[in-house]
Image 1: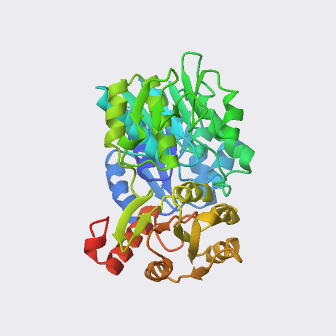
Image 2 (image 1 turned 30 degrees about the vertical axis):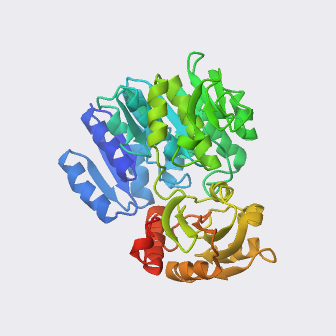
Image 3 (image 1 turned 90 degrees about the vertical axis):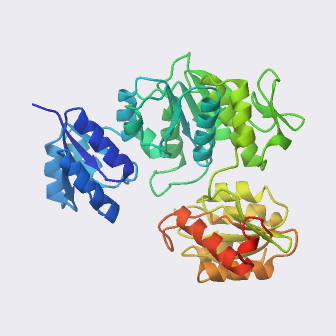
Length: 448
């Protein structure tokens, strides 16, 4: 009799897990509580493979499905308060995350990247560095190909972006290189507190051995504290006092070898340099050549919606940093500029938005948007002028009224997008549209 599995959530990762389990001979039932058009399209494909798809099961139906399963696999977007977790634990059914499961199938080395901010950029950079070194590598996990799919592919090495939710459900997950970039308040609507959040992140190296490598941020006290628990070789990166560091406007390896001159990079804000150092340390530990690392860094132009220039006119530059969905990410962007008109707000994730005012010395004025507009307004009360906007078009017009030559107008919300938009990408695209319409198409992305 075949083993049976229940997959909860039919996003891209969940559907990939369901397919992979079916290919391995499991009887698979897949559940989705909020079937979208994309889920409905996947349903037809999965049912052709013999996967039973159940939508919107009530509590008793879900309990029966869990009871009939040998294995329950929650997708990354399924919140920990979902009843499937309690039911599975009460009934003694094995709960395994998608990253844990897929890593068991991947018979090749893994580079895993986590952190509150920067993990998508570093995952992509490490992959580019390995490919430029002649190694067939694939970016997987929450970026690129789902790990369950990449596990069956031809790549020699898999570079995996992993979240705290995925790490929390790991048991034997063992990357050859584990990168922890930073830790700041985020996802506290998921985790009990910051210590719980950090504990989940630290699972990235929990099963490493002494011939593996942990790459850690020398400038993050919490990451440093948890690095003491790593059973592997620890390599540190940071802007100054670290193994991989910036010295004399040059990125250097632990023995002082030049990686690349800062002037050769297309982007060199402080968080860009930190990401470049982390990626260099990880890629070299995974077998990349120094020439491959250099080539990738010289070609790297940043990630979409992460301090991306979308307009330049009248001495004012406009940047889309919609991917900054927590205050830590927004502050990292703000510290790269001398004078900013900040567009911030959205749906708060239970975080303290008053932290944004730490960079008030760099802020000329603020435009507050979305559900969290009152919190943004309160953060800068009596410190900087604030306008509350009712739409993105209003926000762009208000920002233009504040901006002076030499300023940057920065959409760096510090919040999720799910009040006005379906994703941070949709929010960033709408900002770019509004900027383009205000400035005229010729001024978009610096063409003026």
